[in-house]
Length: 303
Ligand SMILES: NC(=O)c1ccc[n+]([C@@H]2O[C@H](COP(=O)([O-])OP(=O)(O)OC[C@H]3O[C@@H](n4cnc5c(N)ncnc54)[C@H](OP(=O)(O)O)[C@@H]3O)[C@@H](O)[C@H]2O)c1
Image (cartoon, rainbow, N blue to C red; front, side):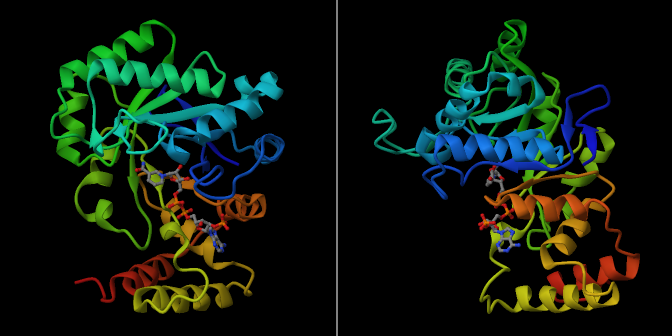
């Protein structure tokens, strides 16, 4: 495993982050013991950073993960816990939410962070992100909420998710942001060409990439022409390296090689796929291989 700071002197994270969106009712429905076992196995591999959001599992997954941590409180200092806030999800678990909407008010940010702390059985979050940019976001109000949470020792660092470069700059003008968590993969290339990754390099803030494997659609019986082209290009690369590299490893190696120093958030629920991803940290594609994958994903060569 590698360890990297999201900013110079900022939060130190494992290069691979485990996203737990599908650990609970939105996916594998692990019980408490199974969650604890996965956390322990991840730590054995050196993976220490876990990505949550208040809304995962219709607001239930944080509490389930927290119940696992409660069984073994000594684990907490070894982990970096990331959570997100700012979305009102319509669900029977929150009858007061009658319309899906965003909320970046000071009151909501603080209340959501405090609820995450309670659910996760922890005194502090390592990183809190604004989940989606709201057109109604008042950066001064967000900055006040962040300042209050930091002063109280409840959140160590702050960031955003799915922000455009200008939205990032607007909030960054009022408060220190350590990362923008964005969708990025060979199947979602916008951030590479719309200035998002350029900005990350300029600000020395490493991006965190959700959906690093395109949310898994490339695996299995895909008939999508883009998927098929990428699979074919990846196969050629794998064969050139003795057929020991798997498709997921090649997709990850491609993303990891970008100079922005991206941290992929892995959405798998299987420890063996985390092990494979860990090995991908040691793969290096040559420039021809990297551009062959880009060409396959875009369906055309570079200009
Ligand atoms: N900030 C945001 O707005 C946002 C949005 C979405 C997600 N996220 C975060 O990002 C995390 C990851 O997102 P994601 O789920 O889209 O990530 P992903 O890693 O691109 O996709 C995960 C999916 O791919 C499947 N998969 C992975 N490796 C595979 C393989 N070798 N063969 C077959 N299937 C494979 C997984 O199934 P298995 O479980 O069977 O391996 C899972 O269904 C989430 O957990 C969440 O923490 C953030």
